[in-house]
Length: 275
Image (cartoon, rainbow, N blue to C red; front, side, top):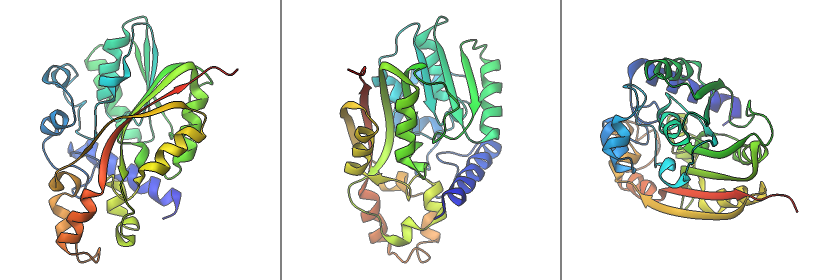
């Protein structure tokens, strides 16, 4: 699929999700189909975290909790790649405190409107939301201490560029902490080329080894997979996929096998100072 076609479709799906308050990656055939709170608890958020943000900030889009392992400190500058309605931004804002700052970048104007409204509702003074693609971050060189991202980089057509940009904007000794979907083996070609599957967090997922290699090639060191887990089948492919299973040229058993090859990982990496 062409990169711009992918971005257009993903942007459309996320915009629709905001309007309908849908769940997980803005598609009925997306990577999750359960209520938002249930999804968030399953992927590692506590009840306290879920209730700590403004209503409407948690749209259930994630595949992990990057905040849990980011070890954010007061006064730090954090950046969220693909910030959506602001769920992780608001959690990070509480960690960095009034002397710190959290920037959220998202390419969907409707998401930014929602996030800014949520920030106003919650009276957050240390957050900012910027329109932009994560392959071309509207952020200055070496200007943030921590980068987080939650189930978004898999949607980017050019992941190599995403990690290069992340390295650029991180200050020396800065750290990367992302939750994302990766593959244990290649997806069937019919799934790779399916636009619904791409917008639903599935078709854009990279092979795990290649994903980690791209992080290292961008300049990061100490790259570590901190956690890895599979999802129940119904969380990977929603009910709607069953209606299009013939279009994908797969049986339900093949679809289940494909789902089992998709895993959520939490990856940590460092930008060490140049020698």
